[in-house]
Image (cartoon, rainbow, N blue to C red):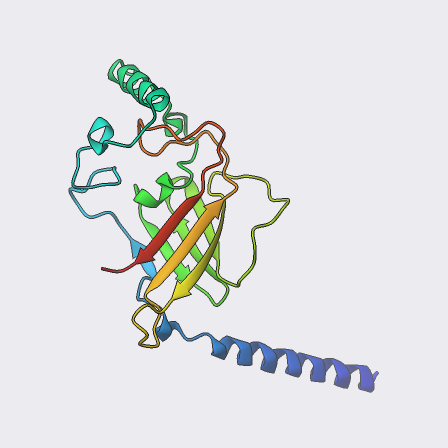
Length: 196
């Protein structure tokens, strides 16, 4: 019995040393200071290009087919309807719209994953930074599946940019309150997340 306890204690000690050694490898000072809660600045609207007005003013480069969908959405919304805005009936924003920070979000960086926790409808985004490929059997979701890579652009030993690609998205989703995304949900979202 004493031998089993001794082996168990030794295994626990090795596990603790291994865990603390791997935990020491992660150096948060190598990452940009983005961790913590982020809020939209006062006076900034719910659009992607803040230098342009929302909705039609964003001048999205739409095909004639999707320009007609946009115009129908705007007409329906002017009459009090939802248009094709899924959030009207409490469906999550999904990507890429979730990143416009309607409500606060928090960023947490770990060695293999960067988490973005969005308070609106408790959306959680995982950006895997461990070198994996996109899975073959992932169930599409509103937030999709994100793979990212931290980059040291100015070669100073600190990461400056997180480049992210998101696939495997489910709909319905829209770019903003009135601009539709393609109904086939084959969207691929590419982002560069950095501090100015």
